[in-house]
Image 1: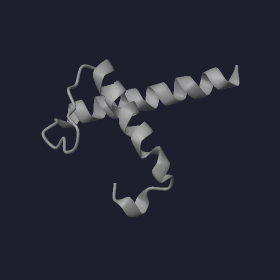
Image 2: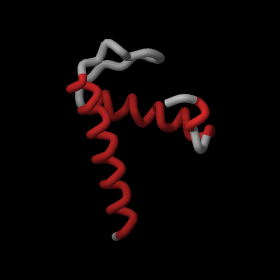
Image 3: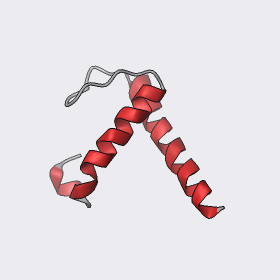
Length: 63
């Protein structure tokens, strides 16, 4: 994501922490900065975990 696409710059750090937490939960080691050595499966599992947690959070807010 380029800097010009960031809608809420203040959320960048929180999103990075969220990504690291999701990676830890699925057993993928991330390092700060570039992680281009991840497989598609690893990257997808991190993204999938993030979406799962966002949906769970939304559903909890509705109840």
